[in-house]
Length: 426
Ligand code: GDP
Ligand code: IMO
Ligand code: MG
Image (cartoon, rainbow, N blue to C red):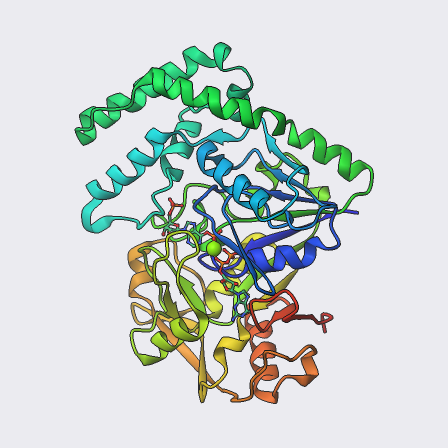
């Protein structure tokens, strides 16, 4: 049975964790394919709230094997804390495995991330400060350290030393920082090695065998397509392929392994960090979305910027990822707005366009053209079927499908796993 991919269709935080947890009930394997602890995926099960950063959102099911794919960057200290937290909560993590090809986020990457953000001043990206950009930079520059270096730290000593010395040079000359002690870093690596060694394996080989045996695989994305290093709002993006390309290169499977490609979108839009956001609201409606949607970052606690749904961006997400269908989250948050607005086109330089521009300054200059739709006032958090939704909510979903060019097959009306229903494509 070929796999299902979960992709953020906006700027992240669309509810990928919740939808992955939902679909993982039917899966054998869940694999995270990109990003690292910049991600914060929330799963709510009754009174229990789990916030995952590295670990795939299938971990709550004892029957699911969870893989950290080769496309990820992994902070060993942070991952070990996350694993300890899960174990303390009684979660069985014996099914967790880490790709031997995934790159390591070292303590100097976090320092470099923060220092380079400070150096950017007003042009700062607003990164999560987790060392993501510098770790992927080292990967592309072919000097990064990978998970397999932790299998034998003695053998990896020269590589670790060289990588640390290079980072120290940068820290010293660019940021006037004394740098890190190589011996201390090697000791740290030895500690990480002792604990992580049993989890490290060739996850691509494991996946190939799982697929061969007909197992169901769920590919869990992080961030969203508008933060993709190629297709996103560059340079206000993360440093990796968050979309469909990343699902392949970040796990080591071929395209035949993929059947369903689900884009996750909120019923409105949010963004954390800097960068253009055409439908952003600066008024009471924006504050209301923050309040009703509890829009504060899972990883950094930052207040998320909010705005109306941008159907130009959503259509773009469908196109560049080949999304087969959409999961619509947080529809409940729109309850009580008398009128809703959806952006159907941009006005830029006296022209109307429905295409997403490459240039950040152009996107920043885009005026959103809105279509107004009627709102609803009924509480929909207990609705479990499409035809039980108020008519206005049904119309909102149907219009969104038309504009996006993909069917909405999953609707979420609250954070809890149960607050979801499926809908056949029409
Ligand atoms: P992710 O990064 O895509 O996994 O999303 P986050 O977990 O960072 O942010 C989504 C937030 O919305 C989390 O706090 C979820 O518990 C919450 N959430 C998910 N779906 C819904 C929904 O349908 N309604 C409401 N009210 N909250 C939701
Ligand atoms: P999940 O998986 C929302 C944003 C940061 C910043 C930019 C670059 O929870 O959806 P980075 O630390 O990656 O170098 O930051 O990307 N960002 C996210 N925004 N959700 C995320 O992950 C994000 N991961 C990174 O805020 O603007
Ligand atoms: Mg998140």
